[in-house]
Amino acid sequence: MANAVKKIVPNEVANDSRPSTALTPMEMVGRALEMGVSADILKQMMDLRDREESRNARIAFTKAVAAAKAEIKPILKTREVDYTPQGKQRVNYRHEDLAGIEEQVSPILIKYGLHYRFESDNGPDRPLTITCVLEHEDGYSTRTPLSAGADNSGGKNSLQAIASAATYLQRYTLKLALGLSVSHDDDGMKATETEEPKRITEGQVEIILDLLEETDSDVERFCKMGKIDAVPDMLASDFDDAVRLLRQRKAKMRNDR
Image (tube, rainbow, N blue to C red):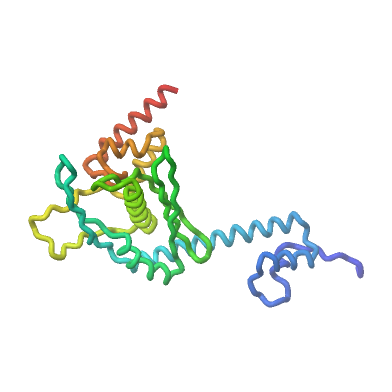
């Protein structure tokens, strides 16, 4: 029939006789309108394109992080903390420095299209929360939050205590976001020096944080009771007791309902 109308199918929008280049969303809309595609089919096509782009961005992010981690060496603990609080025992241990971590990881992350930034949130009745946002150039990102009270150790004033806590949380959230491992820098250390006590692992930190949230527990109060500045500071030897107590609290809350 001379006047027969050709039936339009979605695939024809992307598979016509024009050069096979990737279409932008607006070009896709224009092409579809030219071919008489209905609004419903057009919406389905756009949703499909969005899901595909999101999937590809996630895959690219995962590959980039894996490639970067393969090149990042273990972070060395080069900064030393050594002071004696009034009426207490001497505090002496080594830790990694935020600037040192950034200097080591940033060139590698940039090489693979990755970058990170920090977001902060706090208020008069809640602890400081720092979130490390790790992003890829294709648009996919992850968020790693961690909370702690002000670091009042060493005779700091209120502003110094907040700044110290912020730096501490930036360091830990960046390590968690990238899955970094840490190694002691033994250069110049004497055999008689005492190493920092073993802390809980990143996975154990997540377990504690989940339990604190499930039991509506105050993170700052929990840390004060455990005599630590933040959850990642918990000694590995205290982990089982902390989990047991939090699970008991969770069970009690369930029974009281």
